[in-house]
Every structure is written in C-alpha cells, then in structure tokens.
Image (cartoon, rainbow, N blue to C red; front, side, top):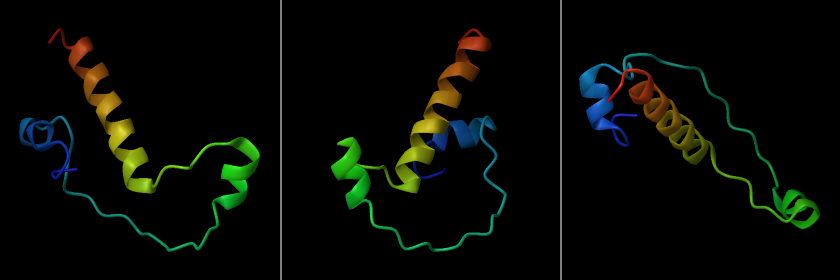
Length: 64
C-alpha cells in the first residue's frame, strides 16, 4: 500500500510490514460482463478502493 497511500503508511494508519500467500487463478470475466453488464475490477484496484475507504472513515472517526 506504500505505492498508493504513502502518507497513511508513514503515519502508521496502515501497517505495511505483513506478508500473505497468494495464488494465481485463471478466470474469464466475459460471462460476467455479458450477463451482468459490468466489468469486474482487478484485485489491486479493489484493494486500493477498500483501503481508501478505510482511511477516510478512520480520519472522520479521529476528527481529522
């Protein structure tokens, strides 16, 4: 998250010292796009959106 939220990492709001196991899964989003009419987001994009929301809520709760 350092890449997307350097200030929040520097302030300690978001820890950036963990690791996680990951696995590649081949998927075909074309059926989702065709049936639902939406394009699924990539994992990094979803994570950045979620962390951004977390930061926003955390700052509001802290009165910033």
